[in-house]
Figure 1 (cartoon, rainbow, N blue to C red):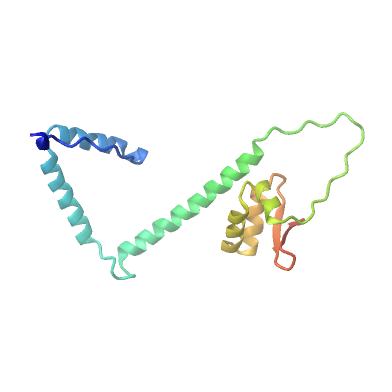
Figure 2 (cartoon, rainbow, N blue to C red):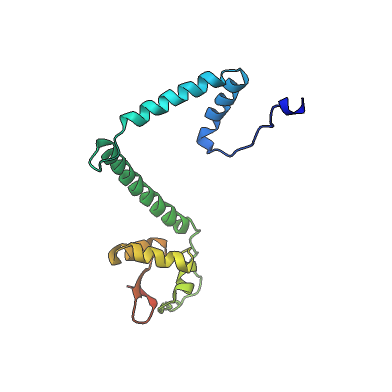
Length: 166
């Protein structure tokens, strides 16, 4: 008779947005509606699957999906820029010195990836990935947005260093 015992529930992680749905499904299961619920879900999924034609690259569904992904990608880029500019612009402004002289500006020299990456809040490998995935112009703009002093950086393949762009 020990084999007739119901197995213990398994704990699973779900995305935060799905928590209310999972709670409702759990409630329906406890109320004994599991079979009806599963049948309803199967009908819904099969109806959804049969209405989508993704075998041809010119299908409307694929084109719509591509457009949505493009829009999402652009929005994520905007968010990334906003976050990176906020990160450096939200730092408290330095007070002016009370001394009558000005300190000379320190000129930046070319940096290897292991020195530039932390300045931009990255690892050297992620810096290289960004450089490879962006055009030269995009990379300059991107580094300027991430640099704490707003300096753009340019890769020089000959010496393997990143040079500041004035």
